[in-house]
Length: 430
Image (cartoon, rainbow, N blue to C red):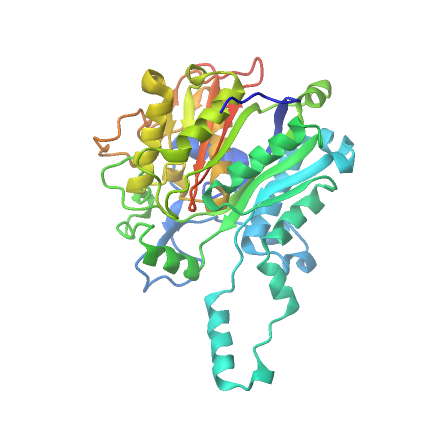
């Protein structure tokens, strides 16, 4: 499809994060640059009898610093991560956010899919089996709020006093990329001037771990060496590692950001979203809709395939996804694929599902800002069928003019966007 870029330019002026690598965007970027793993033994529940006992978990997070008790009781673990990330992003963006009209401020977030805890289901089942119909299991009204993904989105909107557009996305592993792309569109088209955008999730409950284990999607081979479990593009990859966290960015009308002298982390210059219509869980071997999503994002950027230096890959560590993504990159970029750096932040954080593309955004921004491409760790025995430069185990210094962020999800949804360095801030090789 021939894409033409409409309207306004879009700057990224703030970034916040709570991830397995740290409770700030700076700590997360440092962990990515160092090639440090945030995967560890599960502590959110007793996983001793489970086939999978590891995850990428947020550590040393204190909800009391994020919200008062009255508000916390209505916010899930994931929503608290989102609120903390939003607070950091707003502080990072500086005075420009507060100076904007509240009706020009919006929010676009991908949220966790709320569900009851398994113990609650057990209690409910017992109540139903031992009581008359009139004595059905009753839950506290506030519990409903804990499982509603829009409550987390609303809490973030309230933190930013956003009275403009609100977009709540539920597209699983592509969610944050869709949210960032939709926020980008709102500013481009003049619907508003400022957006909070990103994603949050916390699929580290025992229902989630059990479900993905039964599905065969997450690896059960590295319980004794959790830091080695997530290994995209490696011959020994055997499934992804669940993670949790939130990443939220402030997107702003470019002219307004420049006029106020804002520090600009990077510029969003292209976005593409497609659907595979293939299978619910598998990526198509021929690259499918990933090719057209990448093509649309790159075409809108105006840079052409040769203008992309780095791809923050979806790179889940599943045999099918890694092969499909590699095929898609090869088909789109042709000979230039040999010049690309391609790496997977999930090798270090695990899969943050709805927030995953947010971590890739941090990797992309760091690469264009510092000329440092984060590695794919645990790439000890490269799969001979996968033939790109996946930046094995150690970050690489090189100039990065622009980076492509990939996100491909269950259900076959694909979302990609392009980040370009703000003029004069391009990373330089040391």
